[in-house]
Image 1 (cartoon, helix red, strand yellow):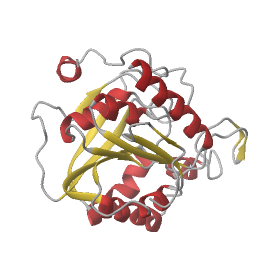
Image 2: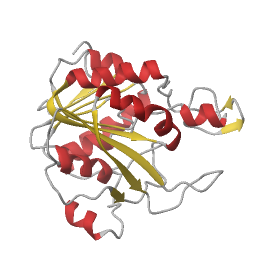
Image 3: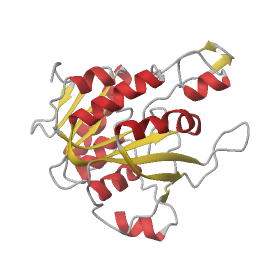
Image 4: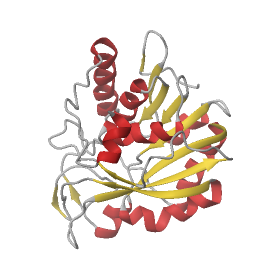
Length: 262
């Protein structure tokens, strides 16, 4: 690792870094990670809908004029995204899995690049149960590309390809994802003491899921707010086994999913 962690747990099972995603991955040893689970802050939707300039979160007073913003997006040109994926491939051990979350716009342009680096095994759909925003049909879902480096079966054959889990509302951090989404990823691909990595840490949901699964965790984000938010969340969970930023389960009425996580 090239930089000192922003936070590391006393047992060194969890460490988070304030760093650019690609630079962070370059600092990791080759073949050192068992599972990558991540939700990049894509720039595609804002660029195409012209709602902002190089940012994804915040209120826009007018098109192209940003008010307060939380973090920079990952500028997802083909070149940048392939460089990111190649670093993911390098740090992953052989016969391991990666989960990449996508919005509709980035899915159209960037998902094909994943096939240039990894073996894409399936496209998963996160059904948020409650309807969201949208100009042309209201959005209620996101996609997850599931791929592998080599061959590895899933831990369970009972996991469906549509995950009905309620979205987080009134979150303290923008785009916060339910821990259950990451828990399902790890249910399929992680074993105890596996090293889980999230190069776009955000609110730290993946870290909580990793600790619940008995895994080690490495994460990074360029945002100082992400670091503080995730540090508080991780420290509290280690002390109390409670998630201070997602206090209730967000499982919906899907019995198949509930059986897997309860």
